Length: 363
Image (cartoon, rainbow, N blue to C red; front, side):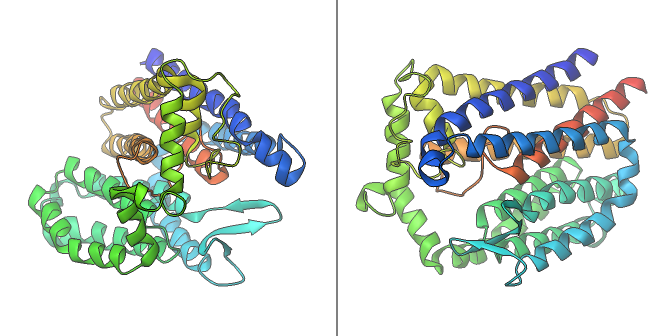
């Protein structure tokens, strides 16, 4: 078990280090042009990494079981933050999306916190009502209503990608926790008309779907980003153009250091580089699942399971979007993309998994 914890820590550190190198490579020219400092994003990312490290040490020092007592208060705080961020003058808006609190040059995205807190709440709920999970009103609906409230507030930002990812994570946890599949399937079928309306009644979301089906219909407009992403991946070949030698990062590929950093990795490090990234995430998933599978305490098991599934799911979605397999959703690549809130809460998730694995080892 100790070796598994070491493996989880080392895999996380490797992913973070790759992120540091690639963030500098992907952002330095853009940062030099916009901020007159080629290391602008790297220095900010290092600060977020430092904050995340401090919080990780705190998480590792506490008894994770005590988090059960804070699941509901944290959920209430999260709901309040998600409401406050929607209020003009309090929340900060970028390109029409009001998702951040901003203090000076630093911002905080409450939806990242909501993802972890909701997993904490669901893990606590399932552990307390394990025998009632087959009951529609006492085991299934309470979680769905809470998840729907959180997702609905995130949708108002608007952020459909994060909301859907959260609902998928909750659905997986409920199924593993004993919820009958027909409850989940029925909920999915009933929500399809709403999902259809949310996508096709909003012009930019409808355009994303149409662009996903054929980006070459508008190569200079809506299809520009995914086309540039695929050009970056294709031009990397097997061995890549060389670290720092990307051409798409020269103001061709938008969000090169955030949501589409995987494309730059493909261009600079080639097929073997991106295959290595995928392998690292698979190994992290394997080691984390193996570390928590023998946890005899239900809360720890479901909490650890939810956190690692969340990391892997968002990694899968990001890579699929970059490769053109899924429509653009705006989710960062865990540990690698530039982003303060996402990096910090992903690090906290890993610290919680390590805490759970260590506690299970001592039982």
